[in-house]
Length: 400
Image (tube, rainbow, N blue to C red; front, top):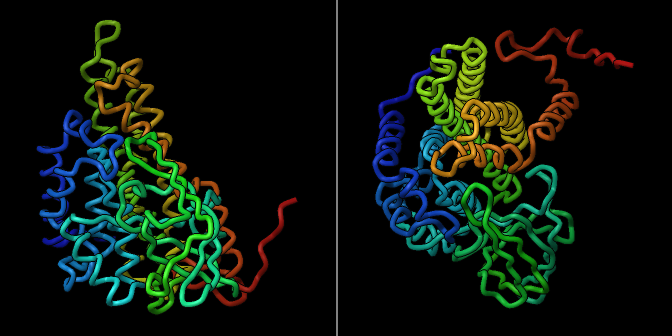
């Protein structure tokens, strides 16, 4: 496929990489570690650069761009190990509010998100195997409002957020979304540091009363939630790809400088082979991210299964590649690979966390494979088109 970025997309990628190169080195990153929302000065600078409103509507001050532009930004942030919750707060939570929120909710919160004065978080994960699993937190009607009971686990960027978008299951089994104030009585939040330098929290909801206006009820919220989860997972894969590329460059430089037996490590054939494998995995991850973003942009917004399948296949591919690149990079650095003075140790933790975040690669592969088997699309090729009817109708052979 002949793929090239547009002028606008290239400008986004270049400007993000250039700003982070000059304003977000390892020393400056230290000021953002284990802080709710990261460094306020960095967050405000990102708002001025327009990053926080990349996917948000223009009438809220955003740019209203797509999955590929979001991926390019995420890749630059992954390359520089950014811990500010742009992906969680803007590309997921604020994006979901833009898709499923009422005009009043959007007017109240989206301009502040774009300006960097207020931050949102998506509280959906409950420790299940995959992000697509239905929530177990319950919402029951109570007069003119609702009562929430249940818990959420490992909610990134929840500490310090002004509002949470909480997913819940209703009595009829459907999914609902609520805009919840973290200070509401009945909420207990256990905040903690994450291995990649950010902040997250486990949240318990014990008979939490919210009013009717807090519910997001514009259109099909289930489809909007699935769409945002897929877009968020694709963006995280872009970030991991950027981190992998940075780790490859750092490892390549290290083995060319490090001497062993009177010659650089890069002269040894086994080291060259391992670097080549890392380079191939980085190139494959890059191509997979580009294909997934382009496919997601062309997918029907109401077709949640299509976006889910694209994201699952991508996470399986990039997750396995990230684990290998992370391990090879540390091993080729030797003892220096776990030295906090070098970015390689932080990159290793970020990639290993990514490999498990939102479901591991094996779980996503099983989910995507089951979906392909169920609808018969395993017999179709993107390149060659649908298989002949007599082949597509055949049942797959069972291996004893």
